[in-house]
Image (cartoon, rainbow, N blue to C red; front, side, top):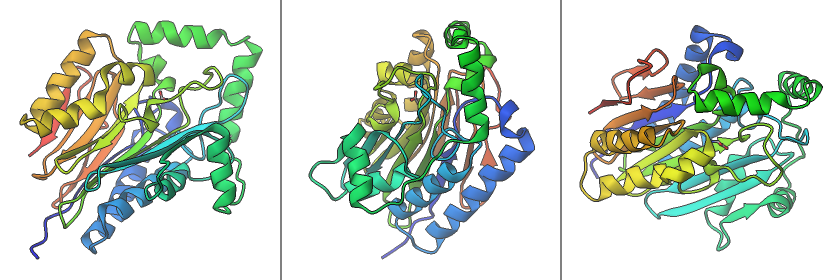
Length: 316
Ligand code: GLY
């Protein structure tokens, strides 16, 4: 069987570099993860294994808002959501608001083969117990400090953040954290994975886009992982919309641009990474920054210094 050149794109969210160690440090971290995951694809790993490994590495990196380093909700607890979509089988699986696990993506992985494929809250926690995953506290000192400060100020910042988002102020970026991976393997299979700690300071039981087809979607034609404000991503049904546009005949850059333009018209605060069956890689954003990196087979690149005003970028 002829093999394809694998393609890979990942993201560490759309929040500012300020609390993440700065541009070069984030670049190094993303490039290292892209290189490791791309090696797996080159060795013939299925896209699903590469995506799970990529999500695990990003969840384990405390600077990103997923797994270790997840933001804290209004009651001081961490609750995480993650999903996996295999474009070949078109199976979507995920967990919503799970706590005390290291890698929520592993629960989504387990659920791929199940008949009940999306679990929330205590059901997801029960699954982790059933899988004998050891309890793990993903809370970092930085995140608890952040929350303590909020509490001292009686959560005024939550309202301030909402205002900044409405004004498209880059300082509002704390609420745009997520991680994601989309891969095309040597057999032409596409898989997308996404994981998040949520927006931070949200109401208990608020549901993130990251474990919905709005935030993570793949078919045989294309795959997309989103980041940004979940409610805005859900309003656009962004990941599924981009993929379906490709399935219906638009090129990936056209589908990305059209979808981003619509989101911008609706004042959406979001970003997305994607690739398609032809090997095209594309990304888009309506927010100021996207922490993305990709491997084309020839080179590693990233979106870290990509223009504030640009809606879309791609490599054919
Ligand atoms: N996009 C992550 C969230 O809003 O939960």
